[in-house]
Image (tube, rainbow, N blue to C red):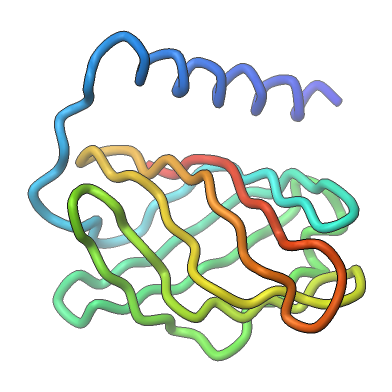
Length: 141
């Protein structure tokens, strides 16, 4: 519970800083390894440690989640690496295919805003076959 409170506080701080002023948009896509925290929901909510590896020269990237919550180990990202794009400050992983621990899995694009040092994620993936979409909120730097 303390971890979830810490994530909520961090996400609130990030959201609040966006209201104070417009952050400078990075001119180039993220490149290399970014780490952070993500809160994912599809019927249940899990808080996971996030590792993103981005290769801006090939426009590809990978996503990995580790506990945090023990259920993070059940989330599987299939068919990696994913194609990525970076347009207007938005970094996107395309055609993300996730096996979840609830009915329906998820498939679609995950996007976040990139300011040159922090990727702020607030996205959702539609359900692949059944159930609600997957929502994803977090950050990596």
